[in-house]
Image 1 (tube, helix red, strand yellow):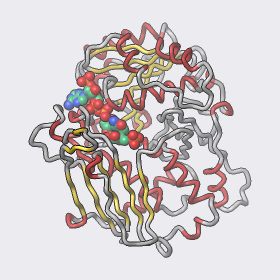
Image 2 (cartoon, helix red, strand yellow):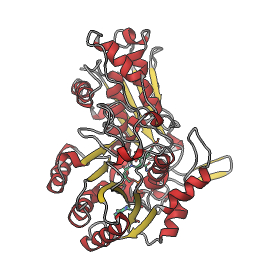
Image 3 (cartoon, protein in one colour):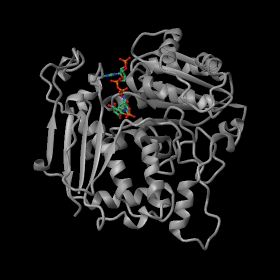
Image 4 (cartoon, protein in one colour):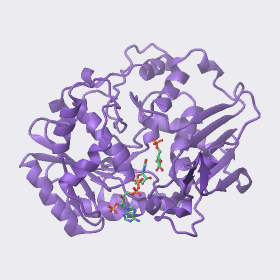
Length: 429
Ligand SMILES: NC(=O)C1=CN([C@@H]2O[C@H](COP(=O)(O)OP(=O)(O)OC[C@H]3O[C@@H](n4cnc5c(N)ncnc54)[C@H](OP(=O)(O)O)[C@@H]3O)[C@@H](O)[C@H]2O)C=CC1
Ligand SMILES: O=C1O[C@H](COP(=O)(O)O)[C@@H](O)[C@H](O)[C@H]1O
């Protein structure tokens, strides 16, 4: 049995409890530093911001603070067992200094990479994307010629964007020398353009600015959609029609949730494909890049004690618990349309559940890992209403401080019934 619960409120932090002495619990919100990501982070495609030298290195995007790109060693000996091969693969991760040099990564010094963070004024951009880009820069994992553009409706100057970014940049990486200097250099490569997400004209203006920075080099462009999913399509349409790379690649990173349900998810994919080929689309679930989640695979497949015990014969139930000690804090524009189930459970927690419960994949290839995950999901009984509890956090006072309730947030409608807490129980077929 698996129990999933998630909440972004301190008031609802208590998970469903288990009576079993053999239960296993997972807690989200861990710190993330050295992150290994063998396969599966990007579903169905691979992102080449970094090198393409190694057969396994392309299923990787580094999106966490201080995260590094793994290069999983290929199997050397044909006679080794699949399990041994996997164990070696999961356990061997190369750090950036062991990988190819920057020019090789970028496709040569004659080309540029322009990264546009669409929704640059938002929570994800501030908390994760800009810090992760800085970590890549610090680790020399960005090409020699690169430019970062923030794009959102909020009016901001380049300087204001830099101040905003600088507030979240830290040197949470091992080598801390010259960090201040590196930050200054990084910020000088960051620019901003204000525009609407559905305006061809605004994206055409962005295109002009990108061209100036690309200075006639072969241009590769990456658009990171850090916006609510209901505006993905408009933004992709405008970016692809008015701001695609003229002579290099154009790629788009799409954040979860991919739609509201399977119908809208299929519609989203169909619409995206009006403007992009599948190999231009990168769907990201950042939980797969967390150290805790990565260690799960190592623990399972490289540990001779756990491997034979990791079965329903010895484990009665598993609890996956995600809890946050802060509220929406101005993110109602996105969150209120989706709620905690679509924000966290359907993607992050199900990915972890699938990784936890899957059988040993035949290889570390992203497709093979995905196939095993799909088998787990297919073998779960659909949740019944009786197996689910939802709730919404209210205002409360603790230690003399009063914390606002969900509907006290100005970006949330005062009559909202959107769940901020959910717990569900699922049984294996
Ligand atoms: N926050 C996080 O930690 C994580 C978020 N994500 C995903 O990233 C995406 C963005 O999340 P997040 O940054 O938290 O969201 P935000 O609510 O912060 O929105 C991002 C930006 O989008 C614009 N925006 C917000 N609401 C609307 C709206 N209704 N219509 C048009 N534009 C709007 C705003 O920019 P402006 O007004 O300037 O245009 C805002 O700054 C979501 O898909 C989310 O699932 C994924 C992983 C983690
Ligand atoms: O996807 C999301 O994740 C964050 C939590 O991520 P973490 O890495 O800080 O644990 C969550 O706050 C946000 O609502 C959600 O969209």
